[in-house]
Amino acid sequence: MTTATATAAPPRPPRQTVHLWEPGDVIAALPPLIGFHPTDSLVILYLVDRARLEIQRVLRADLPSPAGEEEFIAFACDNILASGATSVQLCVIGGDTRTSAQPEESATVVALPTRPPRRALVLTLTQVLRKQGIEVMESLWAESTRHNASWQDYEHPENTGAVPDPDASLLTVATVAAGGITYNSREELAKNLEGEEQALNRRSCRLDWHADHTIPGGGPTPAAGIRAIQAELKNIADGSFTVTDNLIVRLALTLNDHRVRDVALTMTLREDAGDAAERLWLELTRETPAPECAEPATLLAFAAYRRGDGVLANIALEHATKAQPSHTLASLLGRAIDAGLPPKDVLTAVNNTHRLGMDIVIPQQSTPVD
Image 1 (cartoon, rainbow, N blue to C red):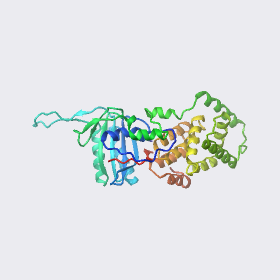
Image 2 (image 1 turned 45 degrees about the vertical axis):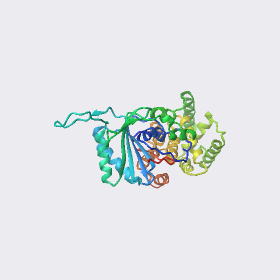
Image 3 (image 1 turned 90 degrees about the vertical axis):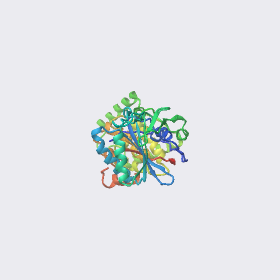
Image 4 (image 1 turned 90 degrees about the horizontal axis):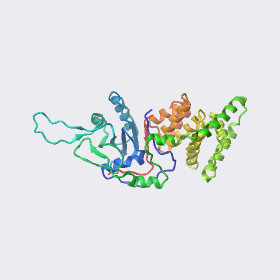
């Protein structure tokens, strides 16, 4: 599964139009779009509506090794074609240093622009996409997404510039106003799902005790478990939710019943409860010890993906599979997300086939590239 990340806070991004006029603006917009400052990454903006060039979704992937470039290009092309995007914009962040272009031996020696790294990968991907009818609007390299970092155009290397301050971009301002967070790195974001060690150890001991002393069938009924979750969703919505050891242990035991967990999965799709559900799964993922945290983490992954936050979805899935490497639902969900299935189709795939990874972000705000 290709690594990626996005905001671990679940508020919805603002619904407003943000125009990205210049190449530097596009680079500066990447951190709020994916939730952190990427390094050594290829970011692909999927664009729809040839007139407005609105960003449909964003894919961020670690730069492949030279030996893995062919496989990466095939996967990226399949994913773009399946998305319905009519054009894309390619952005490489990092990836080593630029090299000097070499003149022909017979040519007069002149000052030539340096070439950005991973040029062969980008130009090959561009060529393959264009053969498939996908227009590559622009392909850019930047040394980072930080203020004043250098950027350069792959196809027109004479076009260069400096990245404007991402913290001052309209997209960042709109994201912060909605409660979103841009992290310095993927690792920093992932830590947001980690709870306090002493509390986790305390709850782990209590869960172990329950496992040793509860007779089969002696736990709460599925109906009682669903009611308990519904009560906490109400508490989340009205701001009265409070983390206690008793609550975390009780809900961990409840979600261990996969009949309850599968009903909880459907709660995420409800318009009147979806946001509260994601916040509940986030709290439970952070506060529940392993291996029981795999259940809320998988629910969080689905909730994040439903909201268009594919990178948080992958972070949550990694959290789940670290806690339970053989977790079936996490594996199925990961494969469905990798295939770019819409959330309702993901749920159908889980329910009907139980066969369910690159990270995809679907912006909620309208973000045209002009």
